[in-house]
Length: 116
Length: 113
Image (cartoon, each protein chain N blue to C red):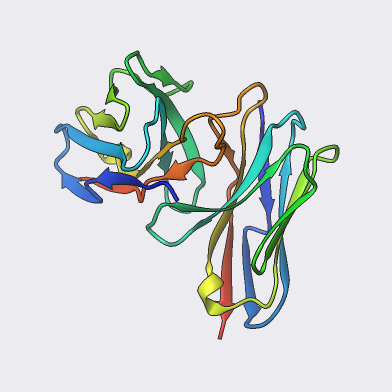
């Protein structure tokens, strides 16, 4: 099956710093990738839809200036958490969907962010 | 707005038992429904995808059913094993979308040896 990777898998940072998370589709091209956030013992909540070559679409309540998304190529999307605060500590998961005809989304392994 | 609910939130069974996980959704205008498995601290693994025109899908010991009219889906796990212990999530695309997903809160399954 299709493979999606995320880097890093773990990051610990100080409050006020920025953290960049990468999401890559390894064996297929993805014009659209999705970023989710998962707090402990809660389900995944969609943060934004990342579109290759255009601006991301953010869900209601998600600050676009705080969570910067760049989808520079058909295999890479990045999420930058700017000026991170302890409440941003969470598990961030990306997903990508292969080209038309395949409806299953493939998820990355997730990135656990801890802001001290 | 689509809402997805999963019952029970947690389930503990002895090895070998058959079990059923439930998922309900508020808007029946869905393209498909997907069941995922999530191990602690890990990403999601897709288990089964049921198209809106289908009533069930099977993969090994797993069987998922879909009743769109009532807004329900079930995941049946036969002859459960300790390796089945994980959180199971169901997800549907929002009405009008075939791409992004709305997730249920999950059922945490523990299969005791």
